[in-house]
Length: 304
Image 1 (cartoon, helix red, strand yellow):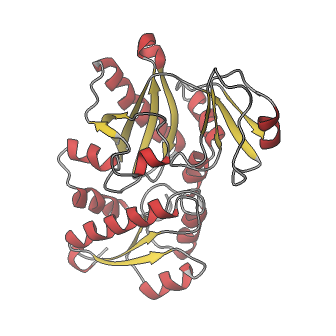
Image 2 (cartoon, helix red, strand yellow):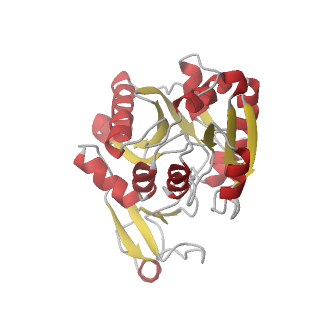
């Protein structure tokens, strides 16, 4: 590629998924940061005309700030491969696998990583009766950012009533009590561990609204738990075939020690908003937000 001062970067943001608003925020923040690092940046809201707009912009690299379906599940990655435009984050296969929560768990299990019991079920069956003994969680198997997550506790009188926007097939997963931890991987390095503190369930509002959650970074947990999170997150990243930056989320039941640490999912395009976690992890190794975004552009390629 050309020198940084003349490099042209497109930031893809928005799109049609349930996480559109988060993506718009991430994209705006990343675009501003990249301009601050000397890049020439064009922001594109990824709609039906995305191919034409990419052709018009003719970028040296594409910063993929899309979240959710179409942008994080291998679809836009396949388009960028077809156009031979270098792009950030994971490729077609890894993105597709990581977005499918049940397939992700199968890969985790094959890699010897600890996961919660779960099953895929029809939405009708889930609303008719308990398909698993409470407490459990019901969520889409192919969305992120805690979109459409239902916690059914032990005191529940009956099964959940799901929003009509929930897909026909959902994941039902045993609820893991304890603390919420997360770890970012950058290339071949796990950066750090954060504990997320909330007043209730770590849902969409807790993730993205100001004051919705509090981050303790680095997490105040025993050294063996920090080491295990770093190890597990890197192994998950590698087992899924991920590239660039990912973030893996955990629940930790401290009463069980190391046996209480469970992987939930790996996010192939972590949020990059003012309340996001991965930029905090980058700061732990001395990278500003702008430097973090610039590293992802430098890492961009095809055939990911």
